[in-house]
Image (cartoon, rainbow, N blue to C red; front, top):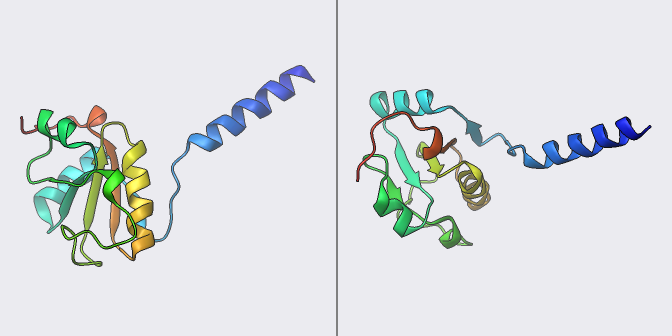
Length: 124
């Protein structure tokens, strides 16, 4: 009985940590994001703080702190249908940002997690 309770507790914790997906948000890995950056017209959004962004970011990424995404369309992202690739440090804030942007009406969002798992070059 105790093992069952522990297992159920662990499962509920794990379920709470998974990323929410929807029809407008696609979870991709770093390799897929990199290939999209090389071969497609995309907008890259870094949703970390300005200080984190200045410490190092992906080439051509726009810094849009997740805490500044609210109830209005960000001026940096005027096209609701553009292909937007979102990242942060570990993946948590990128997920939050994707959900906020979807709520604002964005339809083509790609969350590729964080720089912690980015094996490619960054700008410092």
